[in-house]
Image 1 (cartoon, rainbow, N blue to C red):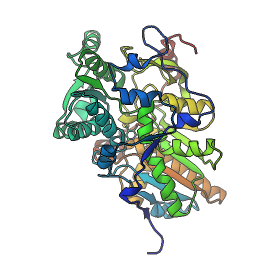
Image 2 (cartoon, helix red, strand yellow):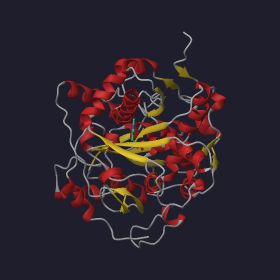
Image 3 (cartoon, rainbow, N blue to C red):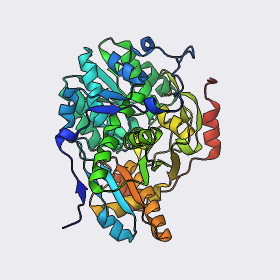
Image 4 (cartoon, rainbow, N blue to C red):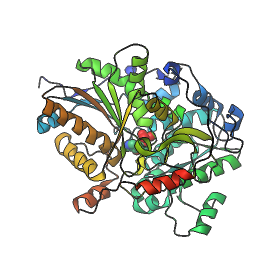
Length: 454
Ligand SMILES: *Cc1c(COP(=O)(O)O)cnc(C)c1O
């Protein structure tokens, strides 16, 4: 009983401020540009979509931004999130590595996404907004926003990628339980949806298409604004509570991470755990290696281009400079819906470009094998997205074993897989395959990038 397995903080240890990495970067990130003119965006350009407080955070270079009391009061439902030492996994691998994981699956929706859904709903409510529209792929973001909207008495309209709408009925039921209205995308409700369906009535949808529909609805109605679950600066900002809590918990454990690992879809949970550590290094402190993990089938950071692109298929969103596979990219239907986005957060793209982080990709079968191994050692069944981080943590732990060198590994377990059991069933039935996106198709999608240089 002498060795602790988890490190638990008090409610009073929930961070009082979010950490904004922009304040510490050696070079500022590229400007966001208007989709029609290509000129740098002003706050006015973003006002149809977001409330002023979030626009200010989006453009802020202030290091610390205070978390409103009302937001902290809801975060208390699941925060601080536990940090575990994976002792049983270490023994199963027979590795000298110390493996730690921060577990974000303790939130009511089962992932890190409520960390930003709650402040986004709060600032919209405070600005007098009545309704939020959004998109969701696998349903993690939609259920998080549905929960947060319900807490603040906002209506929530979710465009859910059609293939998930049919394959993940329980995520849809969860959103409806929180009171949201869910529409399969592409839909007949928007011009963007109708134009896709006119060309391809069987279209099974993509995140890029669902974003177009949600943005269109928000831009048209005065009482409705738009909310995004990843990618944007303010979303990454809200997720920094993850890494800030880890500082204290790693101190309790008496260890310092040598490497920090996170899976990256749009980049928010990865930024959440790593940006506070990158900031400390930039301010002259100690610095671990930082590794972002993405699927072979959607290799944005490892095979995409760092260029200006749209965030959606209909080219309604502002242009942002990011690692992208092209906004026309429709990823294959692999089982980590949360990682199937054509772009990557501009701030994550920027820190990769500055050489502050590394990026690797992992094939689907290695990811599921790692997820099962983790579940059998630690008991928690990881979401397939989170299993990407697990897979690379296992690679690092096994390397420690080969080299006979102890190293401290910290990774973010971004969510549990209780709504993803069909994927596990398919894996056990031998139905999953590895799928690397063909070079030719990447080249084709990239050929359509807008020609903007900064
Ligand atoms: C949405 C999601 C992700 C990917 O999104 P990021 O913005 O890259 O964090 C990862 N893990 C889980 C469990 C998710 O729900």
